[in-house]
Image (tube, rainbow, N blue to C red; front, top):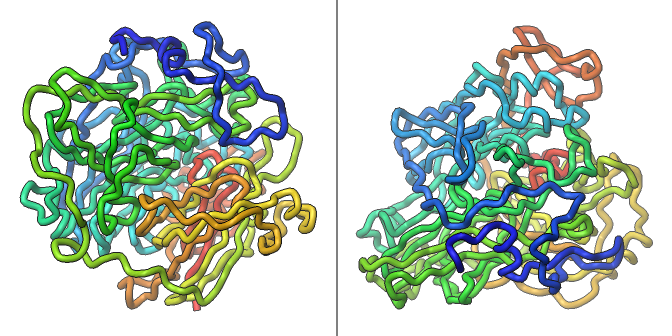
Amino acid sequence: MAHDMTRRNLLRALGVGTAAVALGGVSASRAFTSPIDNAFESPLLFHSPNVTAFRDALPTLPTVSGSNLSVDAVSAMHRFHADMPEVPTLAYHCGPNAQPGYLGPIIEGHAEDPLTLRFSNNMALHPMAQDMDTSLHGVTDSFRTSTPMSLHLHGGVTPPESDGNPEQLTLPGGSIVHHFPNGQEAATLWYHDHAMAITRVNVYAGLAGMYLLRDRFDTGLPDNSLGLPAGEFEMPLVMQEKIFREDGHLSIRSTRIVPEGSWEGGAVGDVGLVNGMIWPELTVARGLYRFRMINAASYSVWNLHFQNNMKFWVIGNDGGLLDSPVPVTSIRVAPGERYDVLVDFSDYDAGQTVELRNDEAPPFQAAVIGAVTMPLFCRFRVGAARGFTGGVPTSLRGARGPAPIAPIQQPTKIRTVTVSQPYALRNPPAIMSLNNLRYSDPDIEMPRPGTVEQWNIVNITPDPHPIHIHLVTFRILSRTPLRTVDYQVANPQPAVGIKWTPDPEGFLAGPATPPAPWEAGWKDTVRVDGGTVTRIIVRFPTADELGFDPDATFARPGGTSAQEPSPEHSVDHGPMHQVHNGMDHSAEPAGDLQGYVWHCHLLDHEDHDMMLKYRITQ
């Protein structure tokens, strides 16, 4: 591919299709086949300015470690491409070393070595304040000038008071201490903002970072017992897609149809970022590399592959290592999911290049207004030096590593939950929903500690939704197609706020499909495809096993704010508790918090209102 490839030419060269479809009957997974015209850009969408691919080197994110750390959320400036200006962003800073202007450093922890982390909100002005929607749960005008935050360790087995509850808000000038036990196997975790109804703007602006948990087998050192690449041959890849305005500033809006300051429901980006840089290039040695991948995007599922369809190996996912490497030529990765892969450049000559691409079609709602596949993330250029010469391990667990993954347990309870978008012809679009409920509704799931449950996740929408359950890991059992129309006709969906979880049995449209081999092992986020029933097996731990009470209550933190909420937002904000200028402006009496949440990890959906509480209780 030519070095001066621009965005429009890149899309045309990769054969990305247009979305010339009507409002009906088109599957979200249907591939586009028409080549895109160089001049075509949907007039309904905003489009990033043309930039040259592979101008910038892939950044290496700084790494911090220790048993006591301080992480600050700050206002920053960042240049996403050599030909673009520095623009306002948010970032996590940690310690006195070189600090990023976007994202956060890699935090390296060690199993059984607890981490005490002080999180401080030192943000000044939010670069995307105009995109906050004050009609969403708990959001006030004061958030634009005094933005609250809540830090969540995604994948962490964490006490409830340190989990980053969306109502556990830290305002500018405030701080909170988290205790992370790290009492789990080595895995690729990540940390990101989780503030109620503004997670999407906080993460989009930069509040995300990788958390690599090590153990005595997967040490991250060259002499690790598993024979895995380490040091310079282990590379974290924080992957995102974005839209930029003509002036280079970040844009979370994709379409002119939805007014500024209104919730849109999700936006497909048109440029790919890795570690905060647009379409970068990494020079690699001739040898084996370990790439720790996160889909840290807000909206899109990707089908990742190399343009020459070269083989690579998946060695781990959300909850840690697989039993043995799984050879693949592509993997589907949803927002929130992590995959640990090995890629071998040994047989390449110096100067050869290979690109990491995506060919997943955008969801139906985005396609109908002209969204196309974002096709590219980065390029690897092979250098002359020899790299890691060890081969791909034959096994990862057992003799040289942790114990093999145990067989899937039989459930003692089967629970049906639903994923839907309530019907409404309106602009902005209607909310998203789990169980047909709002976040503030009290009818929550309450599994008992020590029990094994099967969750049948029924998705009646046409689009995939990654469902994340805090605290626990689970195993994927199967995915089965669903006759969604028949299911809804037989079980009419009531008004939002009334729990709706009909049994899908009797409405299945085909055989159950087991998870792909690379989805085996422990997961905390599962891709729930449109029109399917996705079954997972999850065991809810006891307090004795955890070393803490998962149902403990904890207080809502206070803080300070530069601006009090306007009168029109003084009511109907659910249980949100806010302290502004030392005065309590809660719409309802403030009580203690309790439990965890489960939600869609499409961040716009999570914000409104595809997130529910749950408790592990006797």
